[in-house]
Image 1 (tube, rainbow, N blue to C red):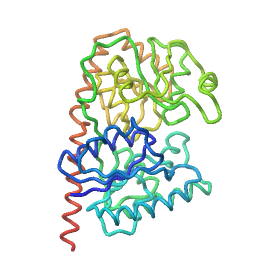
Image 2: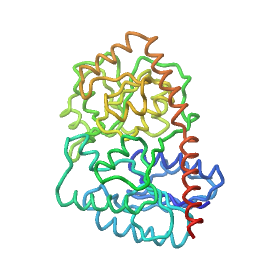
Image 3: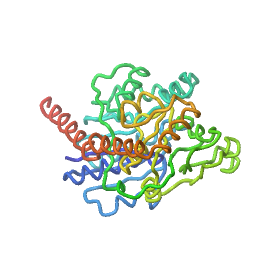
Image 4: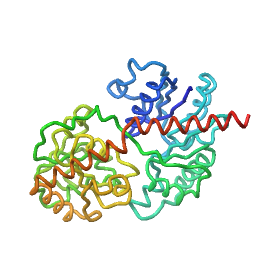
Length: 369
């Protein structure tokens, strides 16, 4: 089986792609990988070295959710059609909506990792209605309509897609997964909490940590701290800088794993999180998860996380204090998160479900021929 996979190099989709492609190759499949959004750096693509049966095509085309991307989207469609013609895959696994409407006689799996309309609805309480938003909405709607199957990483995200764009003919949920062996669940924990998020991303709501009057334990915050047109120091100053928060900046994968291995608690303050790979990585590092009270976190973590009142920094402080003052309870939540991650959200489980889907689509195509 030969699968063409599209991805982007901007956020968590790249980590998702690493697990997917590695799993497919391990199962004896051939993969053509095409990336968009910017050519990845050497460290980002290290995992591709030595992987057999993978042809990789990096590109710098802008992604559809980026402003002023219409020309790049049009050019990237033409580029991808040429790659498909050259490589002749059996099936397309797509992470960009704009490719769902490609005029090719191949099964197309469209993965709805996130989208602008559901982000805006969750974060700002409304969907945008300007000219760019209408263009984007049309791109997404046509891509979804052209897919053989729409996959979302949570039931919540699938519901969002259907609310924003209408019901899909064929859809299903396949939860994201990570490889447990990549993370250290047995390291000695320190009395610190970790969190990750871009300060400029309202959906990640990192600013909630900065609004706390004081933190009951040191918090190590990883991620970009600069805002458009501002230095990191200016952005942090504008948002607030309570004592007890250490800004780690953008961490490499190995550095983030080391931080999670030391952290006793992981804070997930997001307003919008279709799945959340960072909390999963924390769970596989045996961190107790303190999460914002939003529907997707409840779906993913159930009773394995301690929730604070939605978007409420005082409730967040109370939850952190509760775990900091009760090491036994903290360990209990850490073990709950770890066990739930192993039971539900491993890369092997994710890849197996995709392979089953691919096989069913190809069998359907063969029987219709």
